[in-house]
Length: 221
Image (tube, rainbow, N blue to C red; front, top):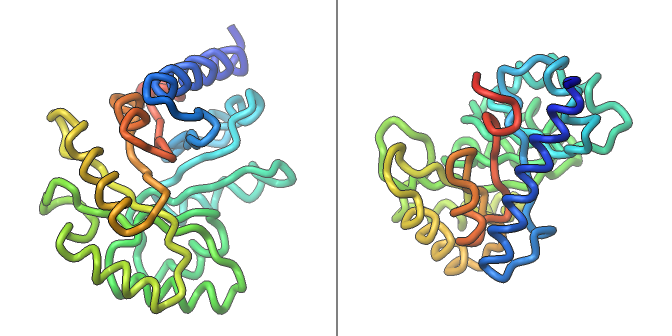
């Protein structure tokens, strides 16, 4: 089986599972964007998925994305998402390269992104990352700090379209997804970036608009 055949089979399987989960929740699967997490993957591993029709990809690091995506995406109408933590001193590069930034989580980054967007005349979609499990080792703002963070982003002119979270590992993710959905609704935000290879169907049933799938599309790292 060729690389493109393998990529097409994996992509069709994930799309079918998203559609099934959406149907169970009486949702339109077209409203859910599949983001293929291509971090650490070389261009030759990504190209078959592009050929198979995948259009949205996610990276963790600005420098890695800068090295491989300009050539990969040229003329192809792809959307590139930054899903990893972003250093404020990389805001300018992130704004230039990415179509969406999923890890807005602190005032200093909000200010850096606002300056970069004003300078570039380009405004990628932004998701505020919430530390939904209150884990010290994870990025994201605290739940009780979310109103202030959203207000700060609004004052700075950031185009905040939703919330993002990664639930704690090895526990049932549904309560955390439900909580993120509740928070988004409370603040009038439609976007929910949640769900990965092991739990994206649960996330879809609980309202995810963006699911971040790596291993199930690329194979084990």
